[in-house]
Length: 290
Image (cartoon, rainbow, N blue to C red; front, side):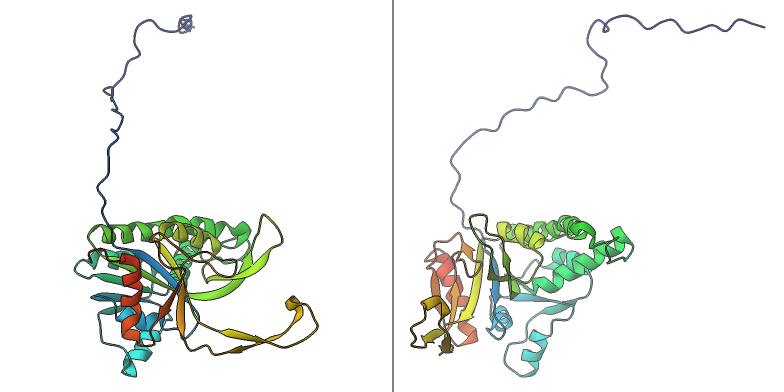
């Protein structure tokens, strides 16, 4: 039998000289600081409002709009059939991939209106559930440990990125949302309920940060308090009025709102749906070139 030759023992210590490399060394120069040119980009606006406030009507009267309707949203079609809004380019979106695809075809419009983001979020969740969890919505699938909503945020960011590309070519984005009452975790005291968008908190977190303005629309309501010896917190009141539309533009314990345009905290909105968006737009641009 022939002797088996063993390989020589490894050399002791690190090899001498430079390590071999198949890639050229990449030198990175640090960026240079400088003053930025003041450019006013088209706004990215979210409006969440109570039912019947006029969200969809407003969207149809924006400048050169394209309205994208989530599956199940019939507001624009109903208003159009009743002759209450103008006929503008619109499309019904039935799947998440349809929504991402149509975003690449919207050059030439001045405003893109999404009606409403809760419906589009559901399409996103459907897609993630099918692809990642084989259609299982249960605890072993999408809903288990909230993992489905976490995964869906990655898909949702694709939508926001496409909206930013539209912004880069001069298109305003308007995201409409239904309002819901939900719990607010207060780290400084007791939790409480407040008004916000009807999407999942994970979706809302990234969308809220992305938006330039988050507006809350409601009807002004004065409350007539019954005379009583009870403390104010225990007295029951009766709402009176409620016909005047308003929007809130700044954060409040009762509702979610913000803006990066130094708008007034409360803006009165005309009853004429033709003037709703122009009023908001005027407050955003505040005399800047449009």
